[in-house]
Length: 207
Ligand code: 3PG
Image 1 (tube, protein in one colour):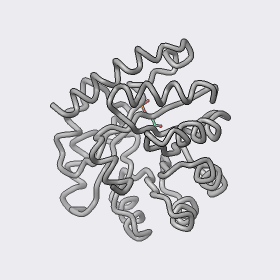
Image 2 (image 1 turned 180 degrees about the vertical axis):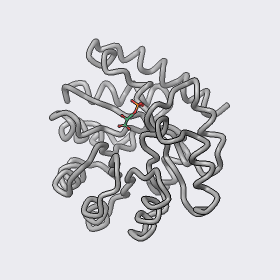
Image 3 (image 1 turned 180 degrees about the horizontal axis):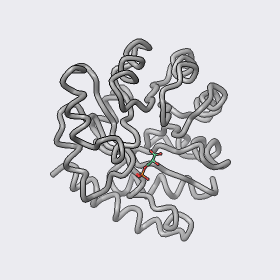
Image 4 (image 1 turned 30 degrees about the vertical axis):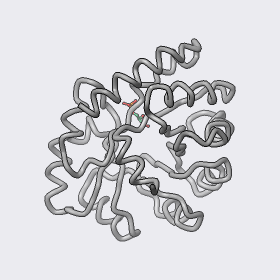
């Protein structure tokens, strides 16, 4: 299965902020145990690169890089083993580096103009970020009318309370969020708690 098909099948993309790469393997194990072998490891911490490396070495989880802002970070992410690259906004330089490196680019786009820019770069799947403050599910439904071939990954402000609003839209490929992976649980080493949150989210998404 290709990366976008795998994300579509998973329905959920856990957004991960790791302060210590030593936690990466256990965190990946917790997500896999919860039934969600997917992670978006954000370049918000210095641990991102080593965390991606540790997770992708397992071979049982689809690892992407998040918060990728520069072509240099694309290289770092891909060299570490990331198979997709997520950005909060649309950067031509980042998308083109992803295309050169042969990984899926998932840039943020929340307006018709941004979606057209993504289409011009050859993309048909975008991250809809920040979803909650950009009009939420109704905004995606409205954009889906003119952009019938575009798929969205809403992220930002999504949680158990509004997950179904997003997942019920046909053009939503998957929903991203950090609620399954609270940073304090990672720091406390509560990986069983993360597995429980993940399993709940998976059950909810499949219901
Ligand atoms: C992201 O980087 O995609 C967001 O920070 C995740 O948003 P959330 O924390 O509201 O889920």
